[in-house]
Length: 241
Image (cartoon, rainbow, N blue to C red; front, side):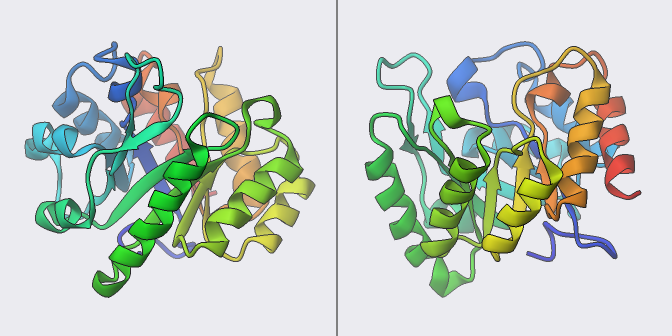
């Protein structure tokens, strides 16, 4: 955990580069090594990616960068691709010498209970190795930014024993502060779809952290930008204010 949460304020700037199974080799992710070099240059202290992506980007990784292995992946070409599917387990994480593993649960989509049960089994399997588990707990799509739904999804992740929760920001500092208080596990805020400009991204970062989030995981807003290094640098600066 100390490789994920760094500095005096113990915060995490996680760069999610795990969208390839869902979206394919789209611009920004089509060159794994290049995008890793860019986000690290901008100040990301941890990378979230699949086993194959990490192997492809290995020459760009530095010893001080935290690695979070995506062990469930969305199969974007499948008719059942709305929910993630397990693709690796704790033994893969140990062989790759990563610092944590990550699984996503999209509540309200077909298969949510099956992947939820698999996540619970994974948490138990990781315990003997003290391998942290990042649980991306997403509320139903029609309540993606509803504070009560976010709190419920995050609390489920905490209840089953996840070490870190990744979820949406509800858009209100006071309401999110209540979510943080009700979920005594570090919460990392997801960035979501790319927006028209960088200002909204930086405001999201500032608001989430002021509400008690332990970090951010900004993916599409970074790797879809014209300058991933610069926007990552701006996010890092906002985090350290």
